[in-house]
Length: 99
Length: 169
Picture (cartoon, rainbow over the protein chains, first blue to last red):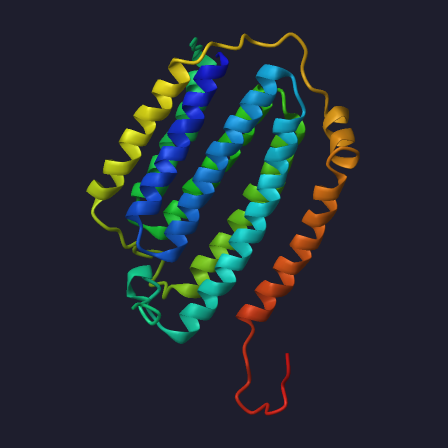
């Protein structure tokens, strides 16, 4: 497997995440799709790091992982608060701030 | 652009559960398929000579984020038995963006000159030294960010008792 093969895998994983982000209406589904996208980016980063024998891709992938953990934690806490206020967590139904 | 059997098997192990995550009807099943994707991605990292990243992926993602998501599903949906229905919009708008994006990315990948498989690999000690010398500022800021994220998550999601008048920030 060459670098471009791994990059195609990373792109496919990212695009599956994009599809999920646009298709899912429940908030947890959005978080799952975001996870897929970040993992796709991580595969691309580590693949480049492997191809160049450089450290930066792996270090950046580690930082991206930690940032994603914070993002999921914050997103889930918001989701729990939202669920306490209203029963339905469909993101299309949250319209209080809309124009 | 070369392929081999083990790489294709790994790619299938990553992509097929990913499609099941986004196209599944059951939310709990989607979260569990995401767990499979995360572990398969760790296997990809091992294949790409990044064993430390793979170990952190399993610990942090499959062991941390997945548990967080399972808790999130269980705390926010009324679970009748184990069937938690997932709501989805029409797949057309998703495909209309994702497929052209993928085509664009593959075209960009195919038209750039190939960087051959490398001779030497990055050792884990190099990654560790980079984290503590070149990237030490980002590393420390990340620690502070994690603390802020934890405190923020607790503050956002805590229950506020209605009878406390003097509860300040």
